[in-house]
Image 1 (cartoon, rainbow, N blue to C red):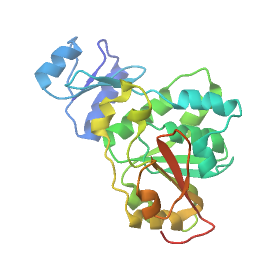
Image 2 (image 1 turned 60 degrees about the vertical axis):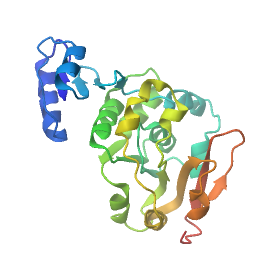
Image 3 (image 1 turned 90 degrees about the vertical axis):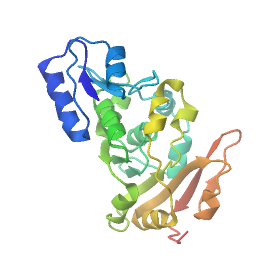
Image 4 (image 1 turned 135 degrees about the vertical axis):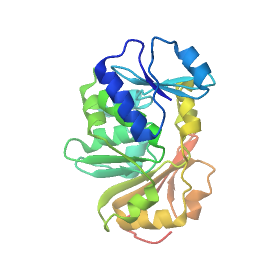
Length: 261
């Protein structure tokens, strides 16, 4: 259910009603009711549209609002010139195009956007409509004193849809790097504050056809982030960049090889 903040403006009411239509979820006027009372009476999760951010409250008592999460300290390391494993695996350069097929909360997309800069572009695909709305809104409204980080967030284009269908429509060699993080690992790597999104995340099954299409459409590389024990690296023909003590590795298919997995 969608409602507004405790003292809504005309703009927040309008925004909440528009989201209600877009997401196909019922709108409920706040009428100065508490979140707890609304959750009890509606018996469903609650999306609160505020002036500065959207907040998601679940029936289980959890609360979520968009935050760059790991991208905050990763961005600081990047700006200090420290090596970023994901960027190293992808081989991203300024001006490149980057397609994140499993956007989630957007941490990897944010770092990619910083790397490709103003002359590059980053598109993130998220299958769950509500998650895509929360993340798109957060990316374009989050305020930080790290100017490079904020600018990178604003440049990301969020698309709601199925990544396989999206990639199939791409021309050959049309995107520099295509990236997959199919298991939605963010909750494992970060705080429990994003736990509510675990139930919302729609984990697309990564299959051979998707990888074949990605290799066709990628100009430089296809990158897979997965658990270090994952059989998918070998299954789909990825060269694994192993990292000592890390729970996750990056697998790479260089477009130069253009061999089917």
